[in-house]
Figure 1: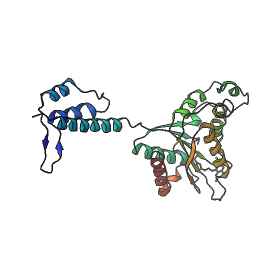
Figure 2: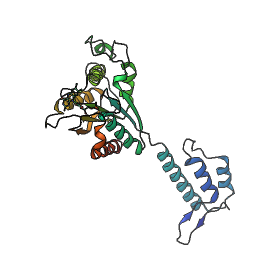
Figure 3: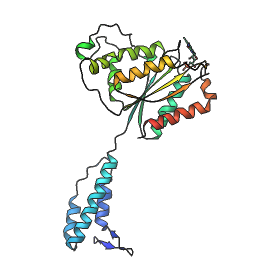
Figure 4: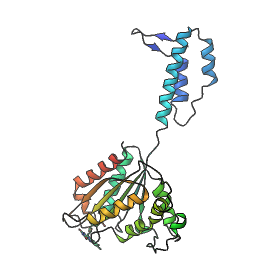
Length: 263
Ligand SMILES: Cc1cc2nc3c(=O)[nH]c(=O)nc-3n(C[C@H](O)[C@H](O)[C@H](O)COP(=O)(O)O)c2cc1C
């Protein structure tokens, strides 16, 4: 026990002590990868040639390296901004599917319902031009860090008069503080590589239905340092929850969420 062996095919097999050490310490998520005293004791008692010992040591290091790298893959954070005042409405259901898709691929998700927050419209005090912070104290205080910490931002809104809802637009306009950090104060925002997506829903079917909102979202993403990476634009949906009859749109939302958290 504890000695290395060559299998029938000449492949080097790790001694039991190495195997168990690797399994217990290196591959055990959340624990350190320091060799235990047991590991060192087994190294000494084994009667190995120098080449065999070196070979085993390299294999052990490789296993530790790959296990550590695997366990340290960061969990992506996805922020969903729900811009409709209608809970469980079309926008909400589509966003929920997208967030589910992201979770299915291992991401962490958070949804904020803008209508439930107190977000005043921008008053153009331009205090943010001085230090990158808005002078208005309201729920945007909690939204700024979320916008900066997310790896993926999804903004979802129904079309209200060919644009975002007033609730979503207030949040967008208040992101001027982050625009100021970038363009006035020349500060670096988190990134690069952060992604953004737009989910839009409207009752009518016109070709140009999402043009205004899409432009707004593109400049919003630019302001917060996020790349406009994807979109899902659904036409012809009006009544509350009517989207449930559009299975393809819900599947598209799920796939959008998955795509956003994949490389
Ligand atoms: C104030 C208001 C304005 C609207 N403006 C438009 C519009 O310009 N174009 C359109 O296609 N639908 C318009 N709609 C319809 C909504 O976009 C549609 O009902 C949508 O499915 C609502 O989504 P929700 O359930 O997520 O709130 C409007 C609805 C409201 C209440």
